[in-house]
Amino acid sequence: MKRALVRTDTGEVTNVIEVTVEGTWAIPDGYELLDLPTASPGDTWDGEKLIIADRGPTVSEERLASLWQASNQWEDMIDQGRLNVVLKEIAQLLRLDHGLE
Image 1 (cartoon, helix red, strand yellow):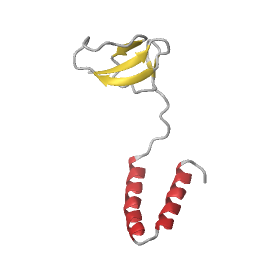
Image 2 (image 1 turned 90 degrees about the vertical axis):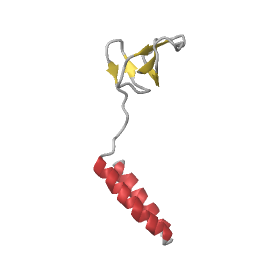
Image 3 (image 1 turned 45 degrees about the vertical axis):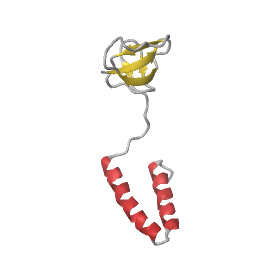
């Protein structure tokens, strides 16, 4: 059973653990073990609902496929001694992904 380890004073989810049998693990002082299946470290339990922490931008499947294809091309370029071209392309992608261009 997946359980969230939550600080009782702040409600912060500090860890998510797998518990095989309830009551066999000593919960540290100042914490409670809650059944919050969608919780991740950094989320907050306010006593009634789970508040999901901002995880930042996500990457679409299309973007991942594009990067995977590019990485295969980059390997070929590196093998051909064209590392500078690869580094420039990576820098360009990072700028675009973070809205710097």
